[in-house]
Image (cartoon, rainbow, N blue to C red; front, side, top):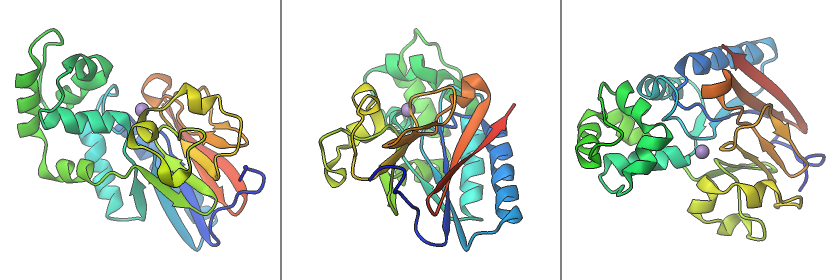
Length: 240
Ligand SMILES: [Mn+2]
């Protein structure tokens, strides 16, 4: 299935939001823009699909997760798991033996958002234990429930993408949250149009076989959303 033929289920408008990485302010703005879009032309049903990577790098992981938990109480939402979210879970569970990864790729900002300081050259275990104590139960539940993928109509949603040559139902977790070049370079049909984030791009990248919604919000100041309805694809963005 390629994009010219693909459609969302009848009567459902899907809002697929790219990597948020602690960008609370942009998330608030984007949700306000989504609400204006819904109000100006109400669909039978609207569903927001978050493509993962809520933590790290940006300024307010903790505030963003609070915001998302609140939004989930007021609207239909699906939350996917990103590689950063997986690493945050592991770090808080004390199973990450490679602090280099957590500290180096935005984890310090996450710790700070929970009121913690950490030395990037220091021991990882004290930081892991401190985070474990600081994480509210609601955030733990939020992180524990994140899903690896979501399917709807002719679209397949996953944080990073899928492994070419492997059926959608046989995809492995590590590919769904980590894959990059092999997926991005593949020109063929994946079975459904894959809607993903993970690899920042200068715009929402709409290809025949996939849609990349990650516009690198924490760095670019632009948070994006692909709006899928019938067989149309639109883009909504929030900008600082
Ligand atoms: Mn990612």
